[in-house]
Length: 187
Image (cartoon, rainbow, N blue to C red; front, side, top):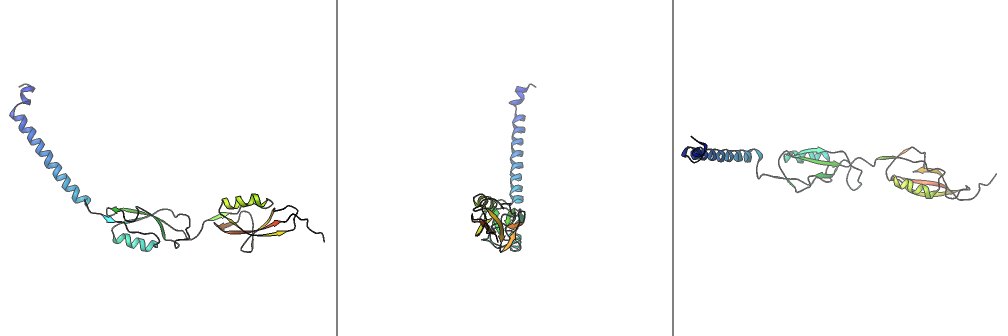
């Protein structure tokens, strides 16, 4: 029997029909199985976690069949309590499946510490951007007799002397003792 005769025979069309029916049945059962195993059409609304403590978040997510994944803490945000959530992904109100990981970023206990740079014997004009660039603020200026006008002589934090290399929390205020441009009087 030649190939051409086989392609137009009743046997070929029967086999083709059975193959199509088998594929349709397999696809039908495969789709039903996928619907059952993936909970098709069932979603959980992600709650708003911002400002809540880690313990509260863990309980709330466990009750909704979601998984908490803590990312590294962020920079300190004074608008939120310590160790509370400041960011979450996916966002609140998103629709997700059960056992989905909710990535959270929490607020650390305080500002990170920065190293005080050596600004002694530099002018106030040089010292100000150096301090501000690393997140420190200049507080009160006191003037002492020194021939160099506006030259930084000493640094203080909350009344205590500060040395270059000391660690202070970010946004700390540093008071400076600077020269007034007058010579020291000889006694």
